[in-house]
Length: 115
Length: 155
Image (cartoon, rainbow over all chains, first blue to last red; front, top):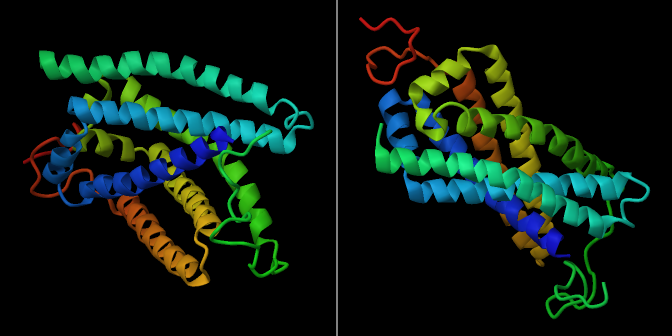
């Protein structure tokens, strides 16, 4: 049940970001200056933490989505749905740890150290 | 599940003592929507994980992203098709997801119609805008001087 709640909440969060992300990317059609100025906002450390949260939501939604497909299409899916959820959480951690190390290193080293 | 901490949507509640929605129309639209969510979901995992890896993990990560970065990618039809597929599938997947949530939680028919009208208009605008941007994009706009990709000849 909590995986279902989590799937809906992460889904809505990702959808709202997607609307904003298409709008900010559309600024390439206005001018290089406009795009680079707005995308610059994504590079500060607070936004960097927000991106980490967004990716965490996307990765959970992705792996839990595969679990839903397994429950719907695999004969033994409903029986093992709880074990599959532990699998989702394990895969989520395995994906997020290297992502966070790489992304946060990029975000914070360039902010404090400059180029 | 022995106890339900959260009531299932559209089940008995103070707001909806019994299910009063009209019965299924007999159309197979909902079945196609259900199937679309699973098929598009699998494709989106590939498209979005690839997008995140190339834009955030490779090279300087997010610090490399500027106008020239986007122009360099969209000079290649491969990334135009990639981003177009991602735009359409993600928008339709997200729109159908939010449509389901509206259908579940908006109790009054008028509220559902209003919310879904706003949702469909917003989604259509974003899909059309994004598609136009990908196909009418000029990587070397006249008059621009900063952050241009290396293949532009600046006078």
